[in-house]
Length: 151
Image (cartoon, rainbow, N blue to C red; front, side):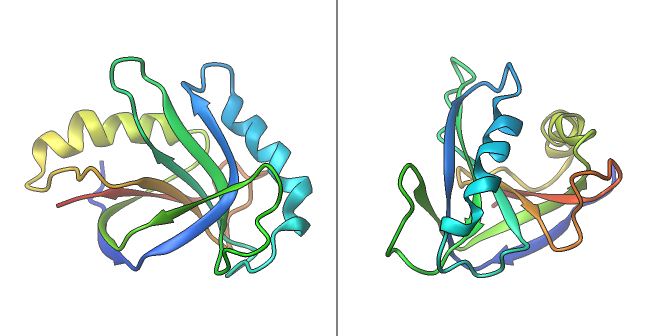
């Protein structure tokens, strides 16, 4: 496993659609398919070509977690109906590249291989997937970036 970049990201806010569960039946890809047609409802986006998959509120006993599919947002006004906002505080992150087909394996390798061998520790902060301007969901080799909070 390649070494991640270490980066500090300023606080930001994401607006989008939320799911809670274990993603056992591909609910997260379905969430993105529900969000995309509503893209035009979101006013105050920072960059419309950059999206986030934000994960938090993990229940380690049940395996359930919250996932917000959305976009960075600068205004608390006019939040579209059925959407919510999450504020992500400034944080230091280990940033790992992945592709959609390798996403779950990369997560497993981070937890099972990288953290046990690293001097860094996972923080209780929010983790997220960053889909930047170059990401193409139709291209299996297109990179996204996993931001894992560290201390």
